[in-house]
Image (cartoon, rainbow, N blue to C red):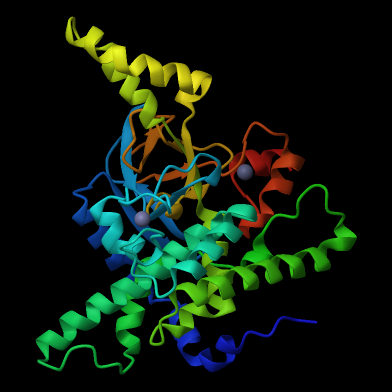
Length: 377
Ligand SMILES: [Zn+2]
Ligand SMILES: [Zn+2]
């Protein structure tokens, strides 16, 4: 039996409008503006008929040279070592920019703007126990709701309309949704890789269970941060597409532990200040033991990096460096790249043999036709 989500039916027209692909020119414009806003002129995002978006060099790059740095749109730390926003903490530890863009609706602390903090707590627990990709999806939804409200307020001011009229404006919701609409989308339960311990005869049941899990998570999120005008965002269809986008485009990242930073900082101090501080800090160090340097791992969505196509002979690599602690990803050339060339990264371990590479890639919805694959097939 399939799962019935009433919002899917009620909001079907809005859902289709949000999922309708933008014309290529509009997409191109979006990336031009995004790159311009970041003062990045070393690359260009172009569209071609076959593979959709691609990133192209606007200049020559030497091997090892920095091509660009990408700022994450949403990110989250894995629950095993999460340090943000403790429920019992008096003060929320989230930075202002994050607070305005999505966290104010997802905060578990006292100042939270979530309609129900108890429900939000349940949602968060469920995500921590099942799949933290739901936390990322919640950020995407909260981000869109808050952006919609902001756009609406500024629109009403311009037109001198009374504030907070609750008539729904589809064009504003589309605008608020735009950054997310740019990500490649497929339904999560359809694009997710079948785990090795699941037999292919169980595939249909497995995918249905995944869909059910998403539906459970969505109901908890809906109880917590529901917004009537943005109801379509609480449809299973969009929830599945948002999670699918993260599944396909995420870059796992490792950020060094801030606690380690603190001890390194103390290490660099000079006497007598150093001895003075160490009188206090050595107690923490003893208490923390080996664990003080555990880094914060997380998953994030990077808008430009997610436009880069795959090759088993990539000319670039995307990763987080030790020094990139501010939510940025670094893209470095691993071969000389000429102006006009497409910049590619590998989504998989490209040193695997052909058959294994092919088995790892279909989850991304394509078959690799790079020269290495063509030679070895
Ligand atoms: Zn918080
Ligand atoms: Zn290939």
